[in-house]
Length: 209
Image: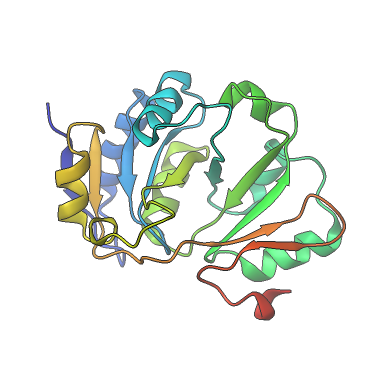
């Protein structure tokens, strides 16, 4: 069965379609969806088989993959991270929702969820209504990784129809939320007292630091 191709409008995502996609996630499905940066591929953080499937699609081992969690807002982060310092929290409040990934020290929940020895986790709160609507309805974060190949600027990664053609036999749902960006998020490492810029992507670092 090829994946479902579901149109959602960012201005007003249809609640029935959102509910249907969340049911797919709850049943261990893997989805591709738009964010405020590039299109992402993800699944429910509590479904080990789905996480393994995402790794298989990306051609990586779960232990090696740098996953991020898409959260609805900052209220979720305490469930997955060690205590965040006040300066870091202030930066996160300023930057999110937005095109940033914050690398934080993971608490003991994360290795169990991802079946890895990772001591860190990336946290994303995208400035995009579709992934946030999904996460809100699901009631917990989505494990996410971008579909874009880091080394190449590829046309398929911005056009939902081309994404569908490439991934329709690998995932369960591809969401058409319009053309995506071809620039990934800015990654900020907040695991020590000093915030380090790991990758400059979309998002103006000077505005938030």
